[in-house]
Image (cartoon, rainbow, N blue to C red; front, top):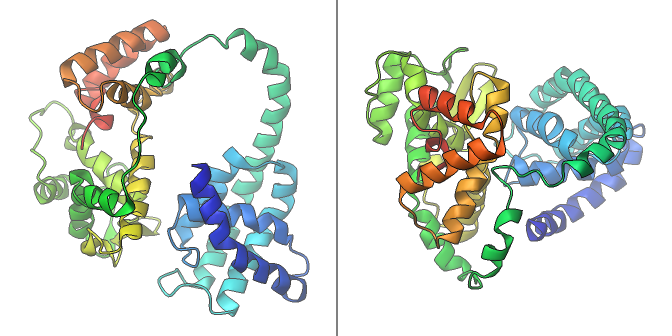
Length: 359
């Protein structure tokens, strides 16, 4: 990750330097230094193109990423949104805003809409930092507690594994092009098409769900005792992957569209292929089951990483039945609600490990 951050920072540096020179005359009340953090996480978490900004990117960067990574929440609360507003104006005024970005007016309107939520998020971060000081002793007492996603219990076994040396980019890209899950995300996004209106309770209605399953080759569910939307967790996993891969793009509060480049997967350029693969890897890392009960969801947090580390120790392949049993036992051992959470996930999903074991 450090190498990726350094590469993104190097890519952004010339653009940010020009913005710093532009800002005093055109946006004198903004704090240009605050833009670098937002622009960096836009590149890392929202877009492979530093010049392409979309309304959804602003929410991803400001409401999802900044609360996790901001160093000075009070300063950010006061100046981050005005700084990003000035930066977007700079990109637009100087012709650097990519053609496939949302219109500058729409971007600025979205920024204004989320400004209060951003300030509130920064205030919560500031409050939590104060609480962290009070909780430090408690955290030290609980330092020995383990979670499903902790790597430390496996440190010795991981250390004994043979050194992994990455193949050249061309070979890695060839392997990435063959990943079936990315192809499924592409097929789903192409099926979605342009400006498909989605629902609030379920993104797709029952007829659309059947069409989507057929489009990506997933079997129709056998369970009939629950709503169809709840019986197809694999479909929603691929939907979320398509969004994270930027194959699917929100274009409004209730509308999504396929990205113009999606049908071209697997891409010809190796760098574009590897960028997409990395987006997909980060997406899979957030594949833990989401249950109706928040406490039960928390009890299974880290399940994806727990699965991945066990696959790594097995050199990439393990029978699913044994892996599932081991994870179920680990969940029960590590959390008082682990067994109940596993049972609830089994009832809701059919298999708690399925969201993080497909593809």
